[in-house]
Image (cartoon, rainbow, N blue to C red):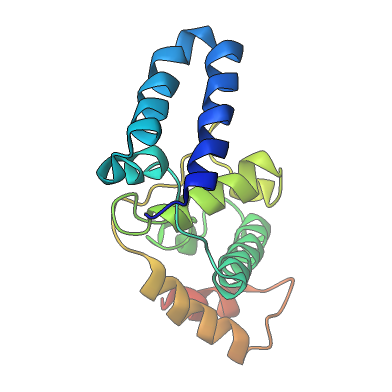
Length: 167
């Protein structure tokens, strides 16, 4: 990352303020400030390594569409009752995204479902992480394609759920 002297100075002042406001974290801020003051460009990226790259509007919309589809699956399964075999299908429950390969998507789902309190039917734990522990995006995209072919219906029945799940 390249910064102008003006940008560095601005960040240095901000870090000084953070050092004063948060004494428990002052050492962390001071180390970052020193890197900026001394011009250690290699370490600039370390200051932002915890920031994700941005998700595009298209990526966010796709995740919301997946959540919408899974919400309809969940409502449909509730109507079918506890004994229906479709409930046992490995894709019947929204698993989230892979924490290693789809981390940003997983974090977005948690933000959207937990922090924004949307799609509560998809919460299965008190504080879900939505980590599927295996890549899921391709699978969800295939399912989403089938759902869109159906016209993105609401109040889906058993046959539609089975088609979505590939059962």
